[in-house]
Image: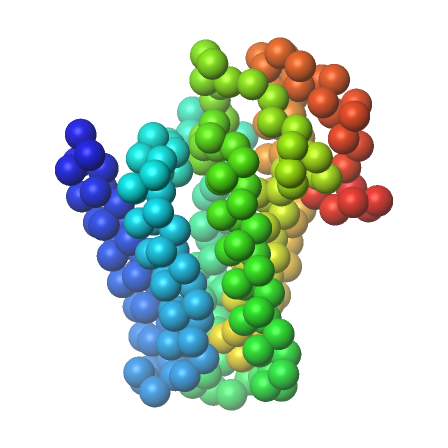
Length: 223
């Protein structure tokens, strides 16, 4: 079973690497795209480290994170829209590199790199705190409400980390144009959060009380 998990993880990792590389370098028309190589390094090196740690220490959690077949129609729509956003973001960044539509100052690019790494660290901490974390909305029979650590600050720290991660990517790529398709991502994810909370309130014991205690979903004092 662990060998199958390893094969699944490696195949998805390589597929993601190849897909993003093609979406960036083909529209750019060149491999001489330093910002793209920077993004690939910042994105895939921490991903590899985190994947190895999960495979060794928490293979069940890794298996959940690799599972992406959502049954809810609304959630499938969110996934499809998000996928389209990413496709447009990478392609527009590549075209921006080819035609020089926009420029991003160097200090903003490196600030975005730091933001991406901090978002990855936040993501890893969420997975350490919540062994029930899954990419699909579901309830484990033994699942309990997690209210410690980052979950004691906001109800959805994993989604908060992905917003930081994804909104930083166009700036790492040095493209202001590529920000346009990904800017609506927080609105899309807020729809997923509302549907997820509706499900958890009805299916997970103690979640409604947790929502009463922890007022904010993503950003303290805002929402």
